Length: 394
Image 1 (cartoon, rainbow, N blue to C red):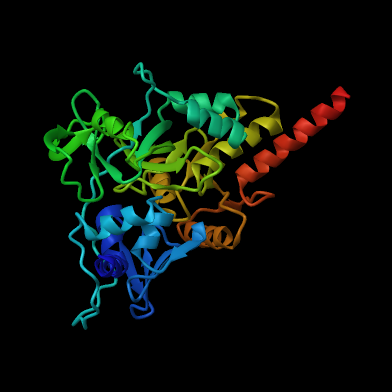
Image 2 (cartoon, one colour):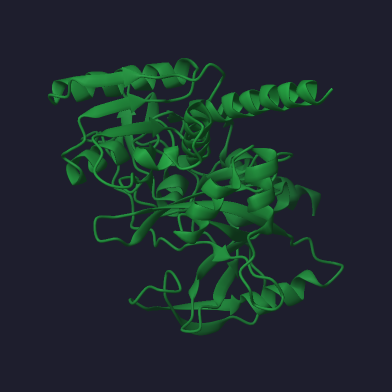
């Protein structure tokens, strides 16, 4: 049995990272340096080595030697679940280098269905936002009026994620359905008619179990399935449909974040201005966009000052969402690049600025935070304000 376990682990380690990321994340890659490495098109800081196993994600400062490391560090799986996922229900073979007659620069990814994470609810059926409110307000220092406004608009919500499971879709009543990542012969899957979100119109058939079934499993002491509460941020396409979602665990003690598979990078998280405005502030993450909005309120002493400008989160450093926004809003002529205050952020901002100038844009500004990013700056500013308030009380 020990030898078999070692063999299974070795098979998982030999998983082709390019094939994994294309089929499960919807990413596509272009080869560089004569196929010595592959760069992700959707996330240009994600690079896979020419052996198609070792990888590194520069913007997140995380990497690994194989697909197991990716599932553990990026998706939050435990080691066993990651191995079983790679060698179990996935028809994934190890990569064997072969000589190609023609080298293609871009790999075409298979379509991945975009399914929104399940909305968290209280036992009585009411929508639950308590964890993300605590995380954004207490943990990140963002004011409640900004949080409540974005919750009301549906741009952020509290999502649910289970380790070892992935969401498949929703039935007509809006109930979420799941499948386990590993092979569980005792699971009684049923064929369901599902849709990608509770409000979607198109349906499809899939074998899955309901969220009620999953919750019943959680009650068993011998299971290692647990539920994570996520902050989910969304973006809409030109038709007004949600086609992009990013997530992060609603806790300052753990680091687990990413984008929902199948997300359209052109549909970034956008806080639109009230009325016509020709300026957009551009950030890497939605947390930074919200933090900058809060700093704007503090600067002008007005809780509604943040509503005067557009703010866009790219979901990294790729400019796809910005280019799409400029197509949709041709009135925007002033672009403030507020990417992270680090080498990756500076490099990306300069590349984007150069591209914009070649497109005829003139008013382009690089506006870095005084800290690592705008959330760090917001927390520091609020700390100073609180200290001054305490001194005044003495």
